[in-house]
Length: 332
Ligand code: PBG
Image (cartoon, rainbow, N blue to C red; front, top):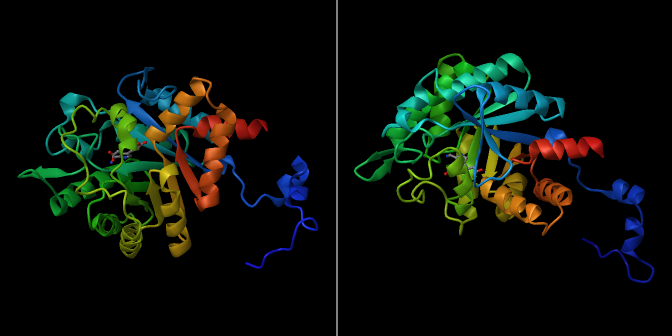
């Protein structure tokens, strides 16, 4: 880039003097249409249970989920993501509740689809909310086995699509699952259902509060480092993404978010696919705690972090702040 001249002829501050010029020269914008709101579903009626490690986030029964989604839609949020808290008695080694067509996430999906026919519904494809051991895959001889897990993920994907989910989001990091799920959907005539691949998902401690929210943290034995990526790696993310695109991914996710903006930027600039970032539970809880303690300004903190995702190349951000952020944007 040519250097644009010299002080005192050149004074970059002239383009920052007031709100009008700052708005005019802004390179990125943030709107409610850039947000995806993750929601935790639990059993029951008219029930709201706080998630202790995520202040301000509740698990909601299906009826309250529907109300929440209507509010999101009214605020201009185009997509929600549903995560179930599965009753521990329904969890087993195989995670078989994942392919019960009447499981919690399927019931929630049907209810939301009925109430809000146009909203995008994202459902995770991974076994961890359903396994007694808290892993995303099946364990044989102490190992998380890949190909057998993919067979289960296919069954999970199909029941979720059948319930009305239009966007399946495999977050399990098994090899080959995107292609296998794509083929299975196409086989049953569901070429309309899209796949949002958690293509670059790291083995991160920032998922801690989420595991609390879905009740898999107490169950989890060991860690997920044999399938999720090493935080030390960046080229490997590009290989993962290339594979998922070749297998049929329509959209990509990079996760976690803020500590991984370099990965987001590389993925977007290399592949030019719709690319989303996940401001994960640990990021949410860290920020929320700082806001609640008065260490940082809440409104500016939320909007700044979300704008940073846009600047780094995100087309949208999955964030637990989505509704708050959208309401803020709408009143500005
Ligand atoms: C499940 C899944 C996880 C998250 C989304 N889907 C946790 C994990 O992989 O252990 C984390 C989201 C968050 O922390 O907000 N595979």
